[in-house]
Length: 121
Image (cartoon, rainbow, N blue to C red; front, side, top):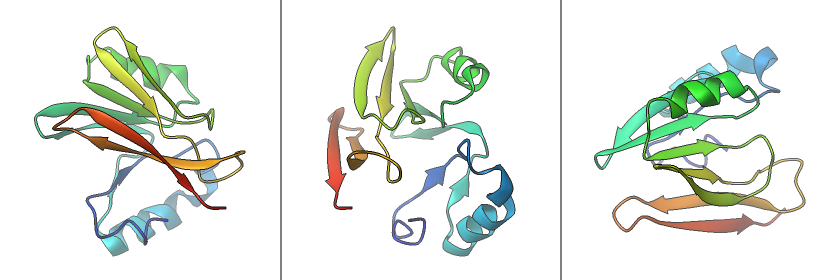
């Protein structure tokens, strides 16, 4: 997946099944110019604060939410959703593995529109 997305700026975090693959994931990211945020992180794009976390550790999620990001992307549940929680829009893109439907979320930061795209399995 990292290779397929390499033509776009790519930021990612590790998930709850990635602990044994951290060196390989970091090497793959480096090879395609992706940005690894490790277990949780925040980036700024189009003057928006975007927090990214897998979501299996509530402490990581709470820490990011305390910074009042405009968006928080998280997964773990494998269920797509888009909800407003206080000032933060929380988006779960779904999953590309072990889910009934595979999906990703595409967010247009200028229009504030999110689209969930189903990926054929």
